[in-house]
Every structure is written in C-alpha cells, then in structure tokens.
Amino acid sequence: EFQAVAQVGTFPLASLDFRLNGVSRFLANSANASWTLDTTTLANGRYTLTVRAVDLEGFSRETDLVFDVSNPPADPTPT
Image (cartoon, rainbow, N blue to C red):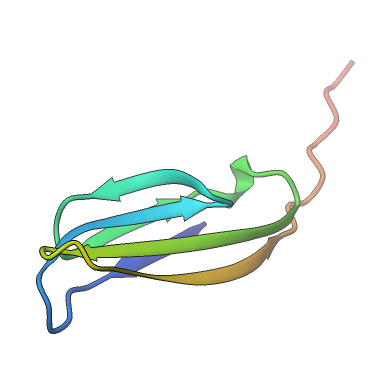
C-alpha cells in the first residue's frame, strides 16, 4: 500500500491530480488531499506517480516519484 498526501502551502489551490504512469487516478478539488494506492493490484514493474497542483490563477506545478512494485507470486489455485 502506498499513500500520497498533498497539503496547501502559500498559495490557495484549485485542484490536485494524482496520476499513475500518466493516467489520472484521483482528482481532488481542494487544497489538501490524500490518496491511497493498493500496490497489490498492480503488475510488478516500475511506475511513475505524478502529482499536479493547479492554483486559483490557473498556474500549475507537478512533481514525480518513481517507484518499483515487486509483489510476491500469487498462490497457485488448488486442484
């Protein structure tokens, strides 16, 4: 499990967009937001989480976090 938390700083924010490998996974229309990702639902591999903040003037800034997922193999189905 992975949790991303963003909190407002000096400038009021209009939205926060949490994107995983370029796909929006959670959009918050408030200054403070928290999003939890269950990494067991992802295939093993490298991922990029991008958080994009947009202020009330329309200016935006984003930051990336690269991480690897290495889930254990699934239990075999009993026969």
